[in-house]
Image (cartoon, rainbow, N blue to C red; front, side, top):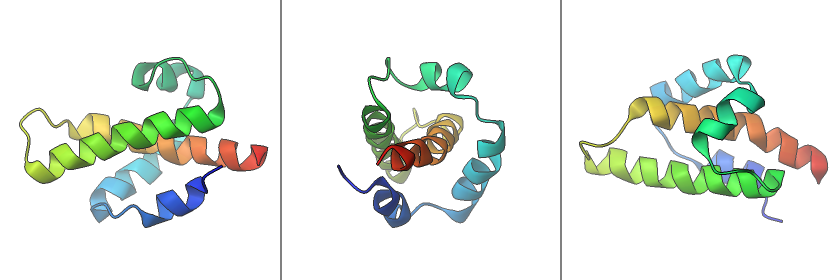
Length: 92
């Protein structure tokens, strides 16, 4: 299994973006929020992988200045990623 904590630590995102995501983790509810972001999760590892893939695409769009980029969606994905990673690490 990949070390998801290392992957998260290596993310280099704007400070304000990460601050907003960390702030939102307190209100994160898996049953409500996760189904809006990814297809049905098969396992915690698969969930984090899907979130990482989605976050990478959002970051590429942000850096390109793509008009379709949604900062709201990016923060939602980062919140889920920060909240779901400890679930994976507990299972390890």
